[in-house]
Length: 425
Image 1 (cartoon, rainbow, N blue to C red):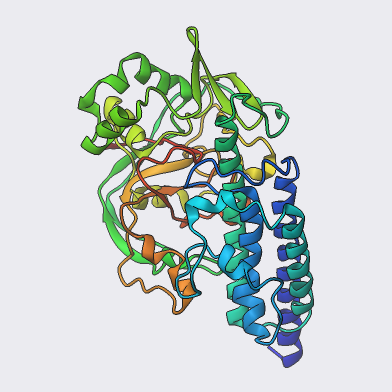
Image 2 (tube, rainbow, N blue to C red; image 1 turned 30 degrees about the vertical axis):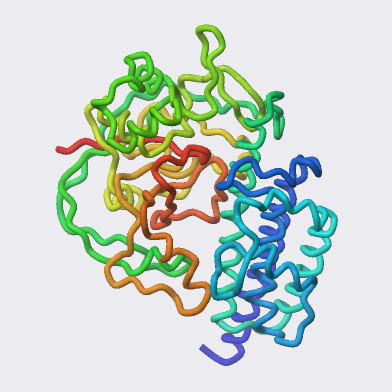
């Protein structure tokens, strides 16, 4: 390759990066546009954050990890933001306590948008010049990080609106896609040695590395997600009152928290309703069941005579599948039933709901976190968490891939999380 060709390819990559930066940053503000100023300030629980904080923190990332490093003498927008909008990067310094983010009535939402405008202007100017490979990787991390927070904006707003007795709607309902009744089939995979983990060109997070080989026994994967109607049968059979289906910690959680159904379900007479981002509505039994914890997913699997897949089993099935499905770009913000009546391959592996696996969130063999503060991104959370795969209706399609590992504590229910089953064969 000639020097001119190398220069042209580098310039094209930078133009693409600049376009992606603009597109992703703009989507964050589009997702916040339906919210009032009051909506943007409130923190409904310690695990959630106000939309205003998400807007600021994602901007803080680029100011801290890109602009401040590229221009050490650059004057920050506001030095106090370093403390207010740091999330968990201990190497960067102290930070405002996470459970108290909702107390930050100041700076105002208008000031936060000014902050975003200022940093975006500096980033646009920065991206007009050649950018080193290392810096490009940091910017890509920041963009995928922002896409994670876009999803959190939606899930956190949904929890916030659940706490409001008016049960407000975030958006108007989108027409439901045409669906057909899809029976559950079992797609078999042979035992053997398989490679999992990221090993192709393109971005990945550090915990998707290194690719490594695992032995997997033969198994059969459910051809689609578990539906709301199927989960309703578990309820009707006394699933939440029968300890024989539950892990000990799960049963203790059911008892202490008074769970009787998936999160956001509400019984009105003999009917079940649920909160969606377009408001309250009757449950649709054809939709994938959503907002269940790992404990509930595991209990349902035991009740049905199956189990949850390991993350290796899930990745084996997903790696040859196109990343296609019901993502945030569809604007539905709710899982949809499968649209194909039959298929020789599993349906709904991507989008709709994050799929709980049976795998604890731990490091792959040979994993090493990156040096510096960005090494705190994933590795230090590898304890007491469970892996989920596949993305959801709140995930960006350009953010997800077969090797992507999400993780939450086993009692988490406010994410768009659902169930896929596996059987041993």
